[in-house]
View (cartoon, rainbow, N blue to C red):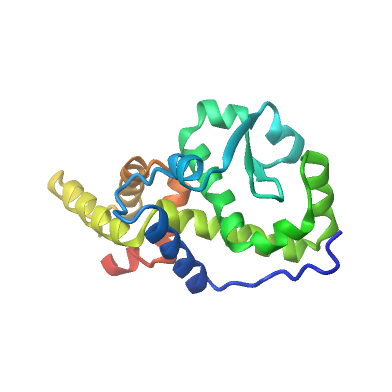
Length: 205
């Protein structure tokens, strides 16, 4: 299926630049939370279609068909896990932006064909594709300038509550991550990865 498909290998910096380009095009004011659903439906003109039991079938929360016209998402995630839903959409946009040529060549239109495509590439190549999309999703939903500004705000806030970073490092950062997750409407796992990648916590060591 994919003998003539070349898997790209983007660095984190390259993905960062592509995410910034995406925000400049579709969300230039960069206000948070980033309205990823509205961007997909009303600016990119891509349909979002919930499927019941998708996670059980594919062990993923979403996938995009190869003509890039529709993102399918797990119905439970769509209805009951807003942060996870938003990240699923941003992740799929990562595939659309970074892997457009791969998807258009692969020609899969349904669940079985998507599974066949994934099974036809190596685990290494699949891991790279997923890494690209995960990194892109986090960078789009948690823009760096807001991450820095909101982190400083929450540090000052908990300091006023009498919580010392140096004396209560783990507890303090758990609190900060929880608050940041609410600011950006993502999971704490997404926040923790962004804090780590941008080395935000290192500034306070």
